[in-house]
Every structure is written in structure tokens, then in C-alpha cells.
Length: 272
Image (cartoon, rainbow, N blue to C red; front, top):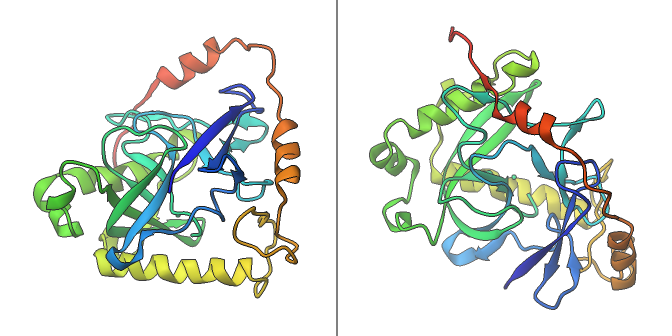
């Protein structure tokens, strides 16, 4: 199973979108149409890379938009970038989402929109505005170290300091925006692989209820080209998908010097 991406609009602008296609060249939703499992019997999952390692643009699958392309998050009309909170440069791992559920993982630098197969190792429960925001840690099955890593304890043993850096990054990355440090459940402890997989499966059940119209979608856009039957209001025809993608136009080239200066700045603050 293979997927490709098509860029529309201009990078570092409000117009930028990254649309997905399947092996047949048909536009799909990365949220709904890419299967959660690459190999269910082995608990190998698909992951859509939203933010490549060491980059700053806060890219995400647009769950409220038609066909759910990847786009840059916006707040108060401005594109969002994470600050370089010393000693971390941008995101310190490839960050992304498991289709039909969400995740980050740690192999070599991937490309935005790349769909990779990952092995889940553990999970961290961050508290974001009063709600649990699960952060799954996983490894690309093609990573040279994948055979040595089968649980979160292997990360602790083979990559000393890595999990501590992960907690540190998530704790502090919003501080440059004037927000308080994030907090974590379970006394900042990573839960193991089995716990993580149960969380993923539970979240996937919520998605199945959503796509089968057993739960209300709210602001989520559930249009898809592969999952829903023709009589479903969520079923999107190829013509409808082509027309939607065609509406996203390229703009004239924009000056990005101010953006580059902002992203290259470092933020320092005293740890409590």
C-alpha cells in the first residue's frame, strides 16, 4: 500500500495545503482513508508525518477541512511556529498522527506527508487545557535500531536521556507564547507498549463510531473517498475531490525573511 502527496499553495503561507493520493492516483483523506494498521497481527501501525524532525512549522492534519489535508496551524490569523527552546531545535522527533485515531516517533528525519510503518513502544499522558493529550512514542520499522526496541524500557536503556528530553520539550514548548508549562499525568511516567496499544485501539473505536454515524461529528470533516459506502453522506466522489483540490491556488511568491529570522531565534528561560 503506497501513498503520495501533492503540494498546493505556497509554503509558509495561509494557502499551503498538502493533499494525499492513493496508489491509484485518487485523492484521499489521510485521517479516514489510510488504514490504522500496516500489519494488525504484529501491531504495526501507519503514521502520517506532519512535522519532520528539527523543523518549526506547526503542521497538522486539518481534521475540520474537506479531505483533511496537512496545513499549518493558525492562531489569531498568524501561522504558528514552535520556538527553539534551548537546547532543543524545533521539534525533536518526527511528529505526526496515526490515521483513524494521533502520535510522534523517533527515526531519522522523514519528509512531511510521508506515510511510514511504526512499532509502538510507549505513551505519555500530557494534560492540555484540562484534557488528556496522549503522546505515543514509536519507531519506524525500517529504522536500523527497530529490532532492538520493543518497549519503552528499551528506549530508557539504549537512549539514556531521550525520554527526559521529550518530557522537557513538551513541558516548555508553549512558554515562549506566554503560556504556562504543561503538566503530565502518572507523575510524568511513560506507560509501556501494551498500555499504549490499548489507548490507540480505544481511540480507534471512537473513530469507527464517528464514521458509521453512531456518534456526532461536530466540527470534524468526515468526507472520505474509500471508507464510506455510496449512500453515506460522508462518501466523496472523485469529481468532488478533484474540484476541491483545484480550488487551492498558488499565490505570488512571498518574502519570507521575517519568518526566517523568527524561526532562527533561540528562547532561553530559567527552569523552575
